[in-house]
Figure 1 (tube, helix red, strand yellow):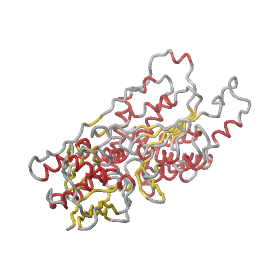
Figure 2 (cartoon, one colour):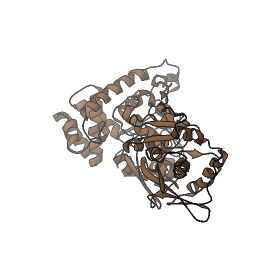
Figure 3 (cartoon, rainbow, N blue to C red):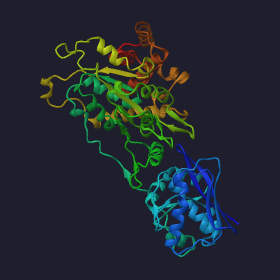
Figure 4 (spheres, helix red, strand yellow):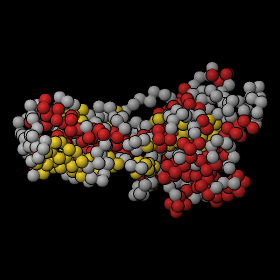
Length: 504
């Protein structure tokens, strides 16, 4: 007789069903595990055996075979401990077989039978709901998994609680979702002295999710401005929060089952590897661009990142997803993020200051910014120069709008876009729209069309650059609550395209 339990194996954010089959047959005593397990899964037999012994459950002197099906799917992680133990207990007729077969389970076992939380509870709950099964997991993971409304989630402290639950001695209560986390940004754009043009550009970038490049001397406020961008972004809606949390669940970043409604803001160091930025490693895990899904990726000292890392950003920026291909894995992660890059104008940083610039001016600036390829630079919708703030301005009182006021305008512009793109597959904001839909919503008035045509000829705009100007103009019109894209909207969009550096 073969007992069956069910769990999942992760391929990116997708949780694929795995059937755990257990057969206890006559023969020399052995405990074998087959089905392409990795080292952590292979070690599960020792953890399961010891955990059962701690509960005075001795394994019979027979041959125990555990098969993880499908056998050609790599099985990675310690979360296979619990389903292996359940299939074995069902085969030994300690717990009902039909109850185990109606459950998807995951969890790591300690040697005394305690269930240790594991990553991936949220996508596992979604997979269990699709198969119309209950999810059984460690209690510490239950609050996270319970966010999937369609799934019934049960959390247990240890294996003894699981046995009592299945035998009807002490049924376990359903898990409840964790707390909704709303981080307080605590950083106000009003704290930034001067830089009114940069503040305006941040507002446009936030409203339409347009990629932004800031170039300026050291200390001009580029990092300070970027750090205040989350404060003007609207919170994640329910669908976005679930998408983002599934990726964070796989990375083990969800704390106590709480779902964060604040948009991610990540700022990797310029020494980060390609696997850290794009994703990869032995398990083909998510990288920074996926962990920033629906949020902001701030890359300071942009030209200092290695050239291969920068070039790998080109395709994810366009498609909103990244495929991590390795010899033993081929997975896809969503990565629709707002890229904010900051750079000094040259290696020394003082290209425009004759008193402090190095002897290689202006060649040092051309060489330094030349580290960013033309195709990658072409993908930045907004490009601005951030000049140093005069010492006299530092003593002035705060100026400009508070972040809350700007956030209200951004939210209103995004509401317009949400209504506009309702029913459009894969299109949420102006930065996503393309093709005929872009022509339909962003065609400027005759004066605006004439202006952008002249600008395209004068500055050699590529087709991509032309379309990105139209998208930015549409966002500026949305911030003005204007139905039509007018000449002033186009003019402002063009100014941000060519202000910091000319088209390649």
